Length: 205
Image 1 (tube, helix red, strand yellow):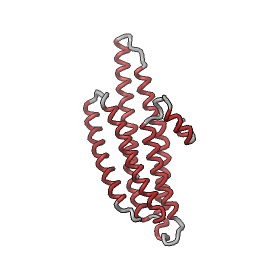
Image 2 (tube, rainbow, N blue to C red; image 1 turned 135 degrees about the horizontal axis):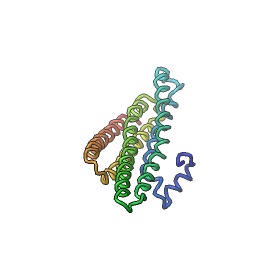
Image 3 (cartoon, one colour; image 1 turned 90 degrees about the horizontal axis):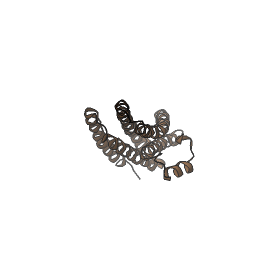
Image 4 (cartoon, rainbow, N blue to C red; image 1 turned 180 degrees about the horizontal axis):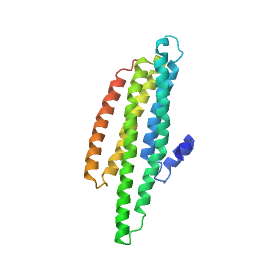
């Protein structure tokens, strides 16, 4: 599993001529780093003088961010698995008309999944903007720039994942699915850019 590799191994494999891990897995990793930084800022606030009243809230945020981090770790492999499923579908036999029909349907099914996995990464990365804002505004001021980096990483992860959604939509024949997904993609793009700008505007150095 990609998620079990150490940092050097992951980067080496990303740089290789293998198509996985690709941009989708890297987007999930970026989101995981955003969640990890959010947990760190919350943990650096807990037990610190002057932040006693925020102890309970920061404890909740730290736990929530940890859950998101673990979820994004799962998505690192889910994205690569989705890509491999598309490749496997293209390798199916196509000698007879029946085989061609089966292959066509399997390809479309795999492409939809390959679009939905990064879409879920983007949806979830957008969600963590809420707790990122809280640690930036209320968290330990000595770690405020870590919160800012979390916001930037979450934005990058979201937009990166959405590019992987878009490229798969281009090959999907289900017009209703494509239109519905494109609409959601545009909304997420607008929301994450706006939220990052709002959060960075609250960073006091």
